[in-house]
Image 1 (cartoon, rainbow, N blue to C red):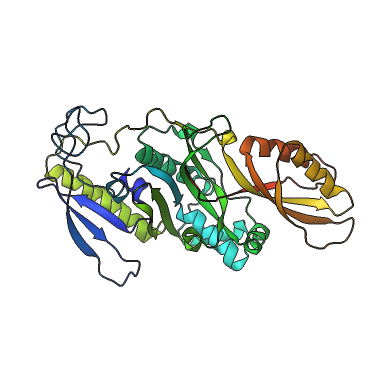
Image 2 (image 1 turned 30 degrees about the horizontal axis):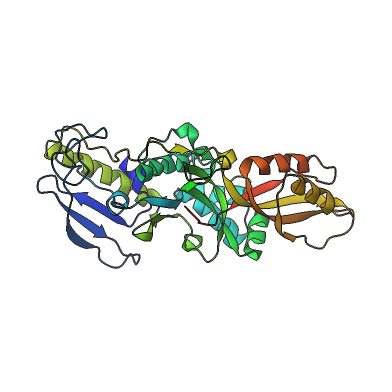
Length: 375
């Protein structure tokens, strides 16, 4: 399970069970540079009924355990101590990132990019677990549990794949100052039914990411997790997320971890998180508010745009900008709209109505726009 949490990181941590001294190995982005071990004092496991930090160890329910300290730490957890995680955004599937990077840089189709990923060993022969968002959803759920200290049921994680992303979408996104990345998102949100932060969004979907954001430059099979804490501020964890070498490294890490447990006679493990936000729940995707990119294939004739805007206006959805390449009257042309904040449920209702218009010749395409704001 540890590597499901640490895929794509360049910083790892290991705690020595015998003397409770941890060594963080900071791996520079330049692969030619030598990793530098930095000894740091690991905190003692929490005593029963006490706050984590000193005394005898306890399990997730604060019950005493026989283990002195977990044999391998995770830097996301270690560096997050003392912080409330207000936002976490991850590119956590190397296969999807490779495919999207190829679509953007070379203008190839999803099918072509997937075939190359399979040939290079970045994608399985049956790729659904990756390209349909399931793998990223599992990882994002674990990260949400670590960040907020409550169990996230996988059924509550909204997952959306990348099969529908086209070179056309990538091109229009570029014109608007964005790129498209599959993101795992964990952040506190104000839902449509609440006036305060009482829910956490836990979702995976393709999203428009501003070109100016650091995640926009994470390409090919590399992964990255962007974390915002209320004390530490913004941090980034980066590294390879697909390929035989990266996979072998993860497997070896788990084997070494298990071997250390056997060597030190560890009978059980301290849970990776302690519940501290048990009154928080996963926000239903329909209640999450965000902005949207919408692409329609419409007949270029007078009155088409008016009918579309009337549907959006009737649901109190605002349009921030419109792009319509010049075409010939009576032909089908793409219509691109950037939409102001609206709930997912309201946007879904609007697109269902727009899709029924005679002038709309293909199912509407909607991609969420990530602002990287959190509460």
